Amino acid sequence: MKRFVNSIFLLCGIALSLAAFPVFGQETSNGFEINKKPLKNFAESVKAKNLDWSKLFSVEAETVLTKEGKFDKEKTKFTKTEGDAELVEAVKQAFKAVGESGWFGYLNMQGIKEVKLSASQNSETFSFSLFSEQSTLERANVIASGVNGLVHMVLLLDKNGAKKLGEDEIKLLQGARAGVQEKTVNINISLSASNFQEMVKRRINEAKETKAK
Image (cartoon, rainbow, N blue to C red; front, side, top):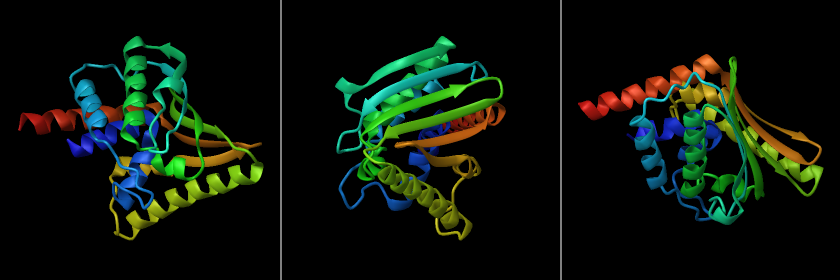
């Protein structure tokens, strides 16, 4: 169950947060904690459904991070929901569950407060993006550099055997990039739609087999 909970959110586009944070434990020096219950509840709901992950979807949301790294419920809104209704709802629930869990505590510590999230799949590509406008170009560059450094460090720890990641996690992190356009930080994760669908289906089947045993 633990592997499935982590992986399903990686595959819903929150790969950067979920793959990187376990390296440092579940609580940072600034005290934010991870609440696993929303993640487990969402994982169970997805596992119980027969969703067709090959269908197209596009979901966009805007929110504000609290000091605990959660989504401010009163300031969270979905600005775009297109495509297969069931997958759109699943992605929306994924966003909400991650928002409740506190996984974005690290980004909050880096100065990211107001964010726009986007998860979409077309016939060729699955992608997840997080945008956050900063007060200055310099600040945006510092945050992007920090995120890229974190990704590099996690991959290096895996390569050196200090913290082993799964093949899916590695693939997703290798596709993660943080960049800057004017004063806006853009964290993007992209992979082929076929790879995304294979990962999701494999992890769901693994979870079902584990529960059956």
